[in-house]
Length: 365
Ligand SMILES: Cc1ncc(COP(=O)(O)O)c(C=O)c1O
Image (cartoon, rainbow, N blue to C red; front, side, top):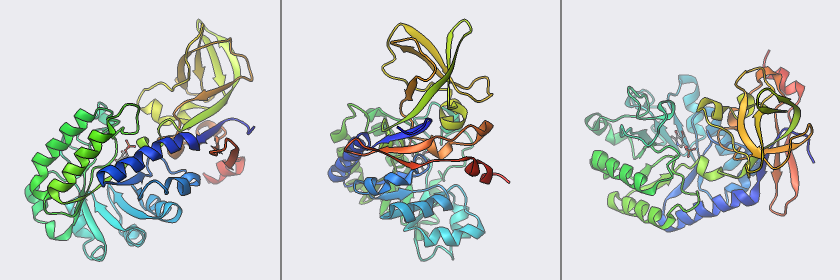
């Protein structure tokens, strides 16, 4: 058994998401690109690429990673490209999506030989977090003025629209898409492809996949476009745990257990969005606050109920540790970075990456 902490990617759980994605591709005609911003652990890309069409990215490094490690169709998107990276981005992409008309115009010459698209912002979203809301006031994420976009239609053949956020409600997705059709219909009818972004929780339990497929197909047929989806969280949801060991227990009015990991360093996204981690089954008569080992006072994974008293040396599995975790892990406090372990379909476990003191040192200078 590898030393904790480690992220444990369970391929059989990943497979059930992949099979749903493959089903949607088959029944809707949409193509599915993994959003690398959410999950970029390339050791499972060979496996995922059997079920998905390629990757989409947010930067030069992501686009190169997608091309080199995933292959298939590679989309480049970035909030803003710089002069010294645009050439390499174009070399590594099949399509490039610009965030603004000004970037599309600025890089018109360099990008003249590649399929180009533009991000549209419908100015409504499903996000309840201002921080993650692409439609927040004064948002920089995409163009919204139809007249302005009309003026550059000769330079683009597609659009990307990302305005869903962890949206598990099909009716809300349907309503959002209706809104997009209404607002941008005249533009959509003039392009060949439309990416509807990520944030749609269609691999979740009880999501009405057939309704979803029919809606995507109807959209595609109405405008004569190839639809793309960019699932990040939906691709890897519930596939991975963060395996930790208890280092100390205390009682300070509540039972506390300190583990060999840190929410700040290893599951930062939860802290940013003020969400608790998940521990299952979370039933029993022994409530504990599970705390990280960094110096941050609020380095707390959450409060959970356990069947038994927790002792030093006990193992705990923090659930749902794939999305926006490994891509955001950091060396805060010099806390040992979790290894990455893959549980193969036959149940065997394989350590694919370990991090050492030298990695810590070489991350700084
Ligand atoms: C443009 C774009 N595509 C795809 C995604 C992936 O979203 P999710 O991981 O929620 O599916 C995001 C997330 O922010 C995004 O901004």
